[in-house]
Image (tube, rainbow, N blue to C red; front, side, top):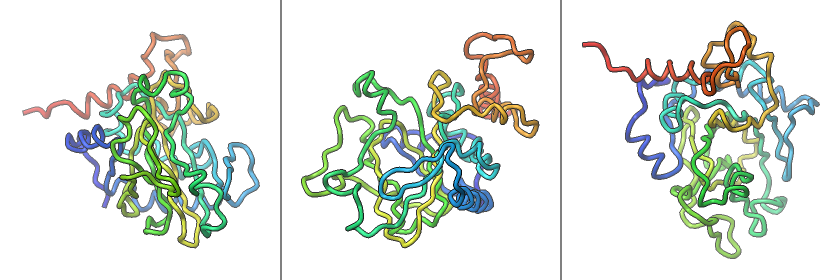
Length: 283
């Protein structure tokens, strides 16, 4: 059964600060996972090109997953994840991207990446690092990794180097190897999720499971950061979405009549939600 935290756990927040990543146990409801997995298979089986995200070694997927199928919308403001995100960033956040990723199962001899010549270890938001320099790049965004296929040892889950978010240089991969010292694959179950920040070094694992590894990566960052996905104005008009969800989808600083409001006012829904969530209990 999914556990909904009333407030973020202080020890978990400290662990994220230390490691640059965090596992939230049972944070993905089984029914949500099942529906999202079915939607992922449907989308990947189409010939749709808008938002398609293909690359080497047979990787497939889509940007803007929450706009493509309602099955992904419950991930947007997941109540088992959102309090931790807000505690680690602030209420002034929105969704930067929702990326559906399908990584095929490949024999080692067929790979062109995750080989010694191209080990694949990287940080997110590389353009920010290029502009500011790694020493001046702060925590700006957090990804929530939802794995939609069973996370067994051969599935090729995303790997991480804990604590690498504080490094001022790249991770060091020994000659002839593909992973740096200290790299690990998170030990998770099918309903656990992994949070990691933009500076944490990570890479896709080696999928030898015999089936595609499906995941949805939801990235949240400050509202003054540009969204990566294409705009989705049709979602903002839906009556079944609340103000917090609209903020996460990109509502601007506007009054209800459409006129311009003061800077930052568009974060009020999540700020009010957070204030209510963390308010002391009346005695």
